[in-house]
Each structure stands twice: as C-alpha cells, then as structure tokens.
Length: 169
Length: 169
DNA sequence: CCATACAGGACCAAATTGGTACGATTTGGA
DNA sequence: TCCAAATCGTACCAATTTGGTCCTGTATGG
Ligand code: FES
Ligand code: FES
Image (tube, rainbow over all chains, first blue to last red):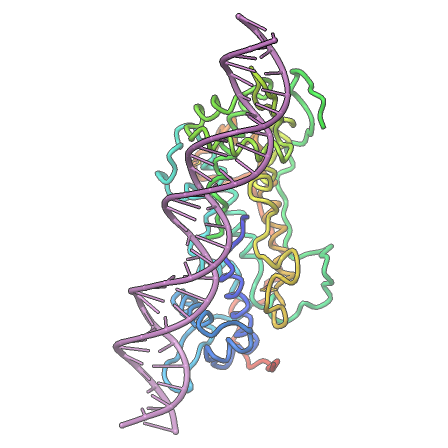
C-alpha cells in the first residue's frame, strides 16, 4: 500500500510529544501515557530513536529522553529513517542483485529518482511543524507547505495506439 | 521500510513490456517470458491492471492484453494505485478512526500533505519515460526530471531549545 | 543499597504479502 | 459443431514481515 509501518507513525507521535517540551527529560512511561500507547512499544521506539541519535537518553533515576536537535531541525524523514531504515521504495532501487529480472528491467534508475523525491517530501516536514502550530490550516490544504513541481513535459493524454479501437466500457 | 510491494515493481516491468509495443496484443505467457517472471504471477498482475482499466483484455484464442492509454499518459502512480490500492503512508491519513490515539495526535493533517506529495512524485514518471529512452541519463542524475521544492519556511536550524510552555495533558 | 529507568536482546503472535492452482468463461478456427 | 487458446475469478497455501511483549543487564540518584 506504499504505507510506512505503523510504528513509524507512532514514533512521530512520540517525537512530537517530546518536542512539546524539548528542554526537559521525558521518561518512557510518561511518553507512553501522553501518547496513549503501550509502554513496551514506546520503549522500543525510544530505543530506536536513541540509537539513531535523534534523542538522547539519560539513565538512572530521574532519567529520560531528550531531543538532541531542535524540533525545527528534525524532519519526519529522520524519524522514518530511524525506525524503518533507509527509504527504499523498491528492493532493487539501492542495491543491484536483489531482483532476479534485472535483465529486462530498465526501471532501476527511475525508481531511484522517485525514491529521492519521496525522501525530499518527507524531509520537508519538521517536528516543529507537526508539533505545535497547526495554525489556521483547516483540513484541506489549498496552500500546503509541500509543493511539487514535476517537469512539465509529456502531456498528451490520448495519443497513438492506432490499432483497433475496442469498445471501451 | 516505506517500500511498496514487490508486485508493484513487477507490475511496472510488465507494463513497460506492454508499452514497448502498445499497438498489439500480448498474452500473459508472452509477457511472462519477456519479463522473466513466473507466468502465474504475471497473470495475476495483468488481472489487477485490467481491473484498474489500465489495460484491456481480449479473451479467447489469439487474445491478450493491450494498453488503454498511451504510454505517456500512464504514470507509475496509476500502476501503484492499481496494484497496491490507494496510496496512504499512514492508516489514519485518509480515514479517521483507524488510529486509537487520535486524541493526542496532531499529525493527521501533515501526513496527508506528505501523502499527496508522494503521490505527485509517483505521478511525475510516465511509462514512456521508463520504457524506452533512458537516453542520456547516466546513472546519477545531477539534473533529474523529478524536482522538489519545499517551502522555505525553515527558520533556524539549530535553536538553543528554550524551555517552551508545557502543554500538559 | 535499593528503586528507578534505559540498553539490548530474544521471543512469539498476528497480519500481510508473494505465489500457485483450479475451474469457469469466452472466442477463434478447424 | 467442437476443440483449443487464452483470460477471469477466486480460493488457497506458504513465506516473510511486522507488531508487540518480556526478560536480563547496566547505570544513576537518593
Ligand atoms: S531491477 Fe528489480 S524490478 Fe527492476
Ligand atoms: S491519528 Fe493515527 S497516529 Fe495520528
């Protein structure tokens, strides 16, 4: 479904919760409570995020987690990357040899481009944008922060195919 | 992994094979041969693509599949949509109620934007681009057809993290 | 010295996906 | 007319991935 894992979604929520108060420590328990997620799962997420150096852990009593960067400098691409690993829409977009049909396949390069485009889309949204404001923005973004401008090349919708024209549905 | 299904990858390959000769019919067997994929799998793919009205099936002897649109007007977004269903990076980006934590979650709107951006990224590549040319493009495109320009809302990248107001619960 | 809280696994259960198989249906041609 | 070619559709199984839990260790502060 071209969907990223549910855990990633949760991770974003947890990060947002931390970002709400970047200056202080948050225990896994507290974050679980605020996110309404199972504590064990949150703990797992925190570990992943910590390993990716997005947040910093303080052990011992009164310990907890804290952001290592400002909410403005952490993007969802970072979170996705931390939880899901490298972004790769297809197996063969990164390393060759994953696919058994590379012979007749000329899509690798294109997948790579798409891959990069998606990453940029994710990198365009910061924690700060998610966390606090949500100001004005109704629900339907007529003017969203993410814009995309593909090359305005090919644009004929119904050309060639001069063969027989079957009665479409 | 933010990856789309392997089948989608295959579907693209198959579509490319058809697009190589849009004017004539291709049997599932022939396409399987050209794609070096198991015939059963290709058949399944073809059915999906046919149901999505991307290709058209002709039954009976000498039957086969044929594109319904020109290769220029079919994008990988169409293919993804046909094989994987609607593009949704998160479950709750489309319909509410999928997530149990919507209370403390302010990410829905943002996911939606990201979702849309990704779709546009996929829609920016057509079958025609994948299929034939691949001209010029070395391997690392310094000037790729897919470009992305997020809003330059970035304020400061590394603020000192002042103690913000607690939102409490 | 003990309670707290993270680190890092191992581990299992459930869901999804990849892939296959079989029968039904339609069409063209012998 | 009857058979062969080819798709349609669905049902099914197997493999992989994912979601989630638990346990043991380590560090810190009171
Ligand atoms: S190399 Fe894997 S599908 Fe093209
Ligand atoms: S509503 Fe599902 S994570 Fe936000």
